[in-house]
Image 1 (cartoon, rainbow, N blue to C red):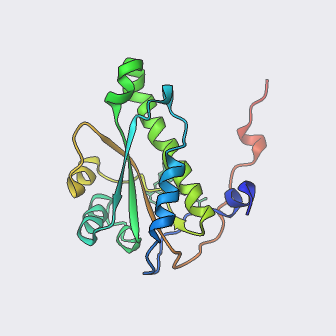
Image 2: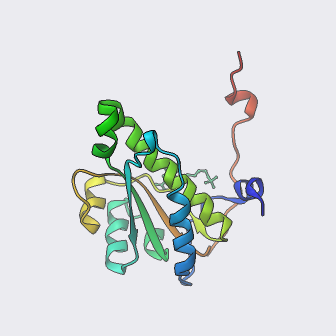
Image 3: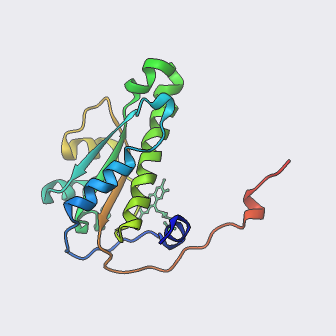
Length: 171
Ligand SMILES: Cc1cc2nc3c(=O)[nH]c(=O)nc-3n(C[C@H](O)[C@H](O)[C@H](O)COP(=O)(O)O)c2cc1C
């Protein structure tokens, strides 16, 4: 599939089979995330790779019982690292760029996963402290997105989108 086909084929999956994701695929996904652009190329984020059952269960609890997090072969957690971005960009780096850096990296990872035939869903509904405590993330980092990865258990239908005419504002 070329890039445009991958973007069109990708959709959120919230059920996974038990088949583990190959280490080589995980490595390729993380390498793609590491190619994401970031403010000043400071890469103001950290990525946690969660495989342990007990840690995934703790993530389920932190994410308001979104059970599919425990079904996934692994969960990537993208955290903003505000102090990295603050070095050059002060408050804007701390509050905005580090969050943008982390979310762009997550987007790259999500598309890489789709290109490798894996299923995922962006998870943003969680208690930050619950996620920190689940795997011992420092208070200085801000968990902004979780990405469970695995092989799809159930393929949902494609979701609709707003029309371009509604979204695009040309002047
Ligand atoms: C910022 C953000 C937060 C989201 N949080 C959750 C979540 O906590 N749980 C969930 O099941 N889906 C979550 N989603 C996935 C969206 O529901 C999904 O992307 C949207 O409905 C469009 O469907 P699609 O991904 O299949 O195209 C989130 C997506 C984004 C971008």
